[in-house]
Length: 160
Image (cartoon, rainbow, N blue to C red):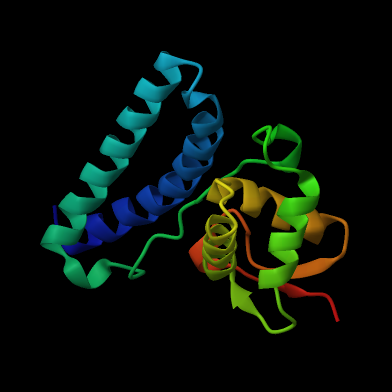
């Protein structure tokens, strides 16, 4: 393959990678309950990774980003099942303690919430905090920049 062919293929692969990332996020929700979905998810990841790796090995200057902005979690609050020892009020208290008025990366806010929960001996998964933050944005208590499902590529803050 020559450079021109690689550029054309790369354009298609990047579009496909974004669509596959959406499919992977949707499949991740069902993965725990369906072995076929888990297998499909693994195949999708392998296929897209191998194709991109081949192009980037031969043409490293074509890499359009240092890190693909993949979806960290697509869990929604209405899908969350809190552990019996954790209340919605406790989740809100933790989230309120880590979100500030300045823009912060979603990854940092989620990480800070997990640490705070751990300090309180609450075992709350990171995806639960992310889902709650998304709900707070949806109801207007917080605002965001970017797709909050992509934690390292989005920001959140308290609404002014």
